[in-house]
Length: 141
Image 1 (spheres, one colour):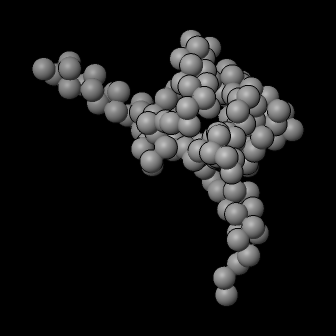
Image 2 (spheres, helix red, strand yellow):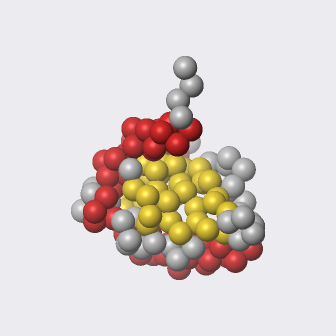
């Protein structure tokens, strides 16, 4: 039996172990699943309505917003076709983590951008292992 598409989507977002975060044109968070709560430490009550700045490291915020606003203006992004992007992020407690994510642009019937959803995975352990391996190789060479 095939589930109702709306219920399927709701259950998928709620039960996804990866973080799913949606922000509207204004960059305010409108969807924050349990995976995002585990990854970043904010409850949905704390995150909903907040700026994406709560998970964007301060030193990267200007670059993030330049790209975000350009995407909202033009409807174009180089990451909208399934490309994976790896970036630093920040948890509620201030610790940094490495996240890998894909995005899903949301458009209105007139074609204008409504917002973007990101599906994120914490790759901090893998990133740290790779960094240590690179240091070993550099030291040996």
